[in-house]
Image (cartoon, rainbow, N blue to C red; front, top):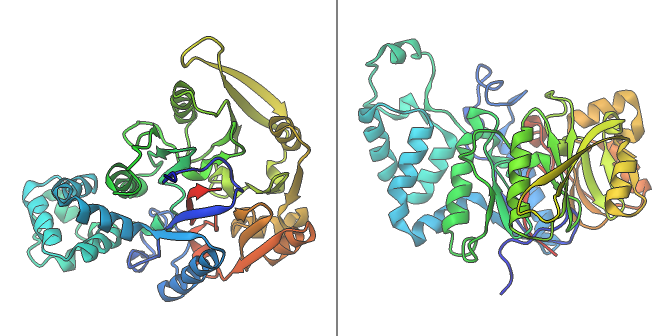
Length: 407
């Protein structure tokens, strides 16, 4: 039986991937809420969906199985309808709805909907105007009366890389850095624990959303079957990396080494994969500012122990660290060829955030044309997708995809 989850590299031929097509949650972004909801601008949904459909079709044309988050959640709840009440209650509670009367109204609201429509509604958020029985009762209700939502939307959902990550044959079910993204992982939790296909082999959870420190998938990279790379970043805590590493080593799997890169804790850098992704067996695309010298921590299992970790601090440039870790010379390809102005511009629109669908074969954003020309000059094959609206969410092709199976 083929594994439902099998990812041991960033570049192995992509066989199966999880996406989320942007929905009404983007239309519930407002100028007042977009910063809180982690957007710098408001995408135009109609065009964002066209761009996302183009992205999905590119993957399908290359023989990749494309699965959608909404479909998987619906299939799970149809297969096990007894899960529905607790799923709905958990979602409402984690939205901060503690009043029992209002909670009951929302439970009734969701339960009266067709299942697929209910899932879309959860993702889109609930406006007060959708609930004619809603009445202000408490001081908090009156203070927040200008807030149009009872439950805020989840506009970051189309970045499926972050809420969870496939590592080997298991899952890192993440605790998101910001409250606004924490509910995203409820969807991941139910499909990996209960979906007829994804839960069949009872995949191990290397990290759990109930942890009290943050970890996000954009900071998790698989360099090869022995080595992982993590970013200690604005969104991922060093304690989370250590906890995940302990769980991996304790499971006696193939992974033997973790490299933890300390990167600037700024919006521009955000995750490790916004400044550094692997594009071929010996090539990486990078933002020039990540080259180094860097502070990197190497974590390895202490010989003769169950899960004790030996930590070594490394102060070297990126090329040296990667070459030694992978046992071969590597080439670093600078965003926009290293030009100080264009590199900054194209890194902002995710010029370094590429999705490898096979060694040397990448999906990239059209708007990063200078970086794309440099990548092609190194002999890499590019699938270029439109990106005027998708890029407004500050994530690239890697961010928008969660590989489930790589060859």
